[in-house]
Length: 411
Image 1 (spheres, rainbow, N blue to C red):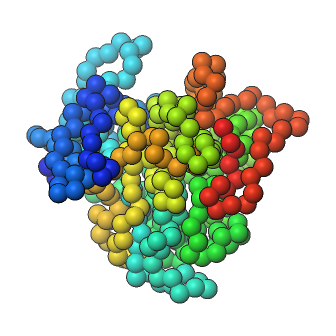
Image 2: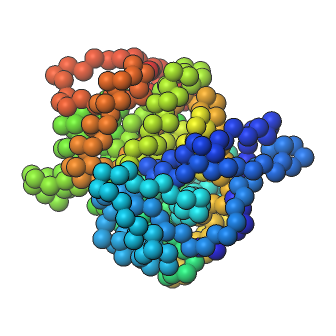
Image 3: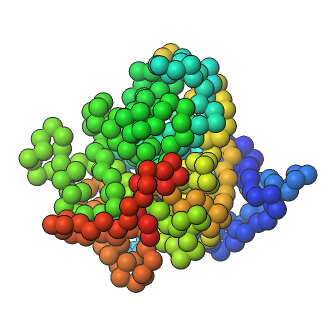
């Protein structure tokens, strides 16, 4: 994929570079080899450029064993180098090979980037024609939900390229978040659904409100690519999750439908507790990872990757014109980001929602086994797994209904 010669990486005001070449990047469950990051500071020292050379079409690494058949066919058309990459011989018990720098750029560019928009039709009952200044968490939720749809419809290994026609599933996924009142997960629908959760249109959401609004919209519009489940006390009860994985069309059948699992947590009070640094990093190592919606205080971000003690994110705080997706062909380029930003984990807001996409029963077993193992080795993991729901769940804490706190479990 003939991408631009660099991707902008914005840093803090000090312009310090904390990336280490030996640290792998974990992007939504895919591992990419250590990258040497070169700094090119502007007058304020705030800009980093991720330099690279000789990029061509990249072969996406094999990251998920449950990729759909559509993913396999799409992947073969995505890259002319896919066949050569897959021809390398490895032993059955070898870990998957790390993706290259080129693979990382292609994977990053494929993620759908939702930002502030302007000049859309007014949100019903209001005069808002832009969500600038208040809709960042709404947009982060859109990024999370579109990533889940892409994974289910095209597979985690699918990559967006300029050399092939856009898959119908990709266009359908983008239209789910179109800035139109009728789109299932539009800014209009999410803002109005917030009113059922005590938030007025134009009011900032916390992560808990955002994922609950999206879950309710998912149920209203009966989207069948996956089910949704919120583990709202920081504990994933496997019996509940299995029930959530039953087919909506036939809930009594012994089947397993994909489940978008969302876990709202609060890992600190005013600031993120450093005890949870490694636990937050670990979330991106799960092959089922769909990232984290969180951010800085009062500013939402969609965290998609980790490297060392740094989180990489897609930033919704960019105002762009609304795109008319009612046309047969429309410009989708503004939904893909060439600018990636970073934040030290300790500077993130302690309120966040961690997301995983569980495709199959085998996926669930692996997710549970990994979490059991990690929790057995650490007293400071961000969530836990239990096989069955207890008869009487204890109340861990009781926050007031506060916009900064939402309904999170304190860890």
